[in-house]
Image (cartoon, rainbow, N blue to C red):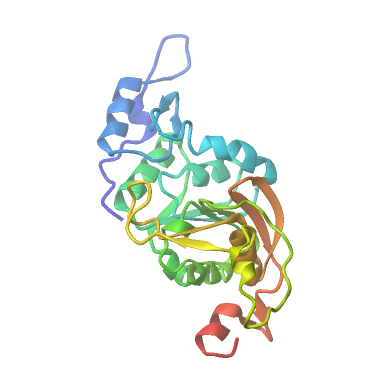
Length: 273
């Protein structure tokens, strides 16, 4: 990570008022937030918001208010991995619920600096590392909760990443992706003849839309699935969908990620899947 030695601790933002609790120097806090660049996560740092004019509104809290109901209020003893942690919103939420260890990873130095600042300001111990989703196997141990929010569609090799992530799970996966196209889901046969073509024209058939250039002014938006594709890929990777708390988020548990003791990814790479 970049050097964060200049990031202030909470004590630098507090002043003591007679006969009152400590108050936050909001002007200083606002300047420090602005100095860290544009934020994508709108965090509430003692009443000062990091992205108050976000084009999606109070994001990602607008999603969290639904997702949070699918996660225990008490996470005492839990290990959490937050992949693509951005400004740290989800890492902070999990730590505030008592998670014993929270690791947030990202490839963007700006996001990591923001997450570090937010965690320090709130007095939370969160481990932050510059690491790609493709390198999660370097992380020791496994996790009770893996958060994989808002990353899938930014990946050129999304299913490869998903199969890697599963190897770090011992509990639940909180998966979110942008979804476009049909939201229809229906059962399909296990096999079709070579000459069957009409199924590919059905709106409920699993499909991924490839973005050659850019979408929403973002050239890292590569693959955007419809709902049927999301659910089919999750099942294909050996996961069972246990809940869908909001339209773009699925809570999953491992169902059959291994065969004869070997992960799907390993079997695919050596040609034995």
